Amino acid sequence: MDISVIVPLYNEEESLPELFDWIERVMKENGFTYEVIFVNDGSTDNSWQVIEKIRERSSAVRGIKFRRNYGKSAALYCGFKEAEGDVVITMDADLQDSPDEIPELYRMIREEGYDMVSGWKRKRYDPITKTLPTKLFNATARQVSGIKNLHDFNCGLKSYDKNVVKNIEVYGEMHRYIPYLAKNAGFKKIGEKPVHHQARKYGKTKFGINRFVNGYLDLITLWFLSRFGIKPMHFFGLLGSLMFLIGLIAVVIIGVGKLYSMHQGMEYRLVTDSPYFYLSLTAMIIGTQLFVAGFLGELISRNALGRNDYQIEKTI
Ligand code: UDP
Ligand code: MG
Image (cartoon, rainbow, N blue to C red):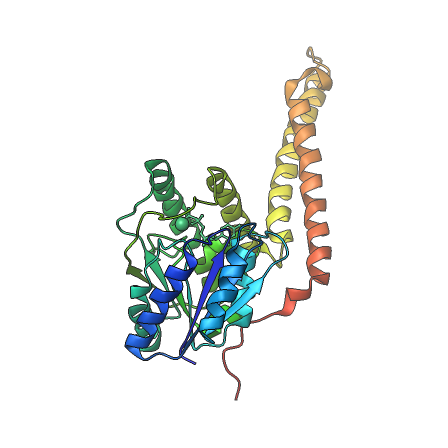
C-alpha cells in the first residue's frame, strides 16, 4: 500500500464527508493505493456515525474509536500503530489542511529520500492571537531542538517514511514536537514544504491559549529527556555539586575568617551573625537534595523499560 492517511478528530462531524471525498479524489487522480484511518478521539457529536457511513461507501476507510477524549497525541499514536502504508500522512480533520498536498508530500519521501516532511502554513488563516505566539513558539523550538530549517513544528499536515512512525512514541501533548522526536530517534533528513492553509470552515478550535504554556513546558521536558533521560545524574549531580561547593567554600571562608580574628586577638562576630552563613547553609542543603534527586533518577532509569531501546537501522 502506498499511503496511509491518519486523521485525528474530535467533534468534526460536519467536515468529515467533505474531507474524505477530497482525499479520495486526489488518491484516484494519482493512482495511489491507500487507506484513511479516522481516529475518533472521544467525540461527543455524531462523528463516529459519520465515519461508519463513509466506511459503507469505501473499503479504504478504517476507524478507531476512543471511549473518551485523550488528546491529539494519543490519536496519532494509535493511528501510527495501525498504519500499513509505505508513506504515512497525518492531516487535521477540520479542512484547514488541503489533501491536494498529498502527492508532493509522498514524492518528497519516496523520491527525495526525506524521513519526514512537515507542512509549513506560510500564509495562515488563524486569528493574530494565535499566529504571533506561534512564531515565538517555533523560534524557541528551532533553537532547543536544533532543527533549524523548520518554520512550523506543529503543522497538522505531515508525511513520514513508515519507519519513522513505527519507531517514535508520541504521548502526552508531544504531537507538537514530532520532528524533534524523530530527530532524537536518529532520523536526520527532516524537510519542509509550504502548504495551503484555510480558515476553519465548521466547528471551532480544540486548543485554547494554554497550548502555549503547555507547549513550552513540554519543550523543556523533551530537551531534558533527550539530554539526560537515561543519565539523570549528569544533570542533577553537576548542579548539586556546584551548589554544595559554593556553600562549602563560603562557610569555610566565614569560619577561617573568624578563627583568624580570634587568633589575632581582634574583635570577631559570631558565625551565625553573618548573612553569608545562611546563604551557604541553604546552598549546601539544596546541593545535597539535588544530588539525592540524581541518585533517585538513576534508580528509576535503571529499571526503566526503555533504557536499552536503541534505534538499529540495519544488521547483517
Ligand atoms: N483533535 C483531537 N483531539 C483533541 C483535540 C483536537 O483529535 O483532543 C483534533 C481535531 O479534531 C483536529 C486536529 O486535532 O482534527 C487539530 O485540532 P484544531 O483544528 O482544533 O487545532 P488548531 O487548528 O486550532 O491548531
Ligand atoms: Mg485546525
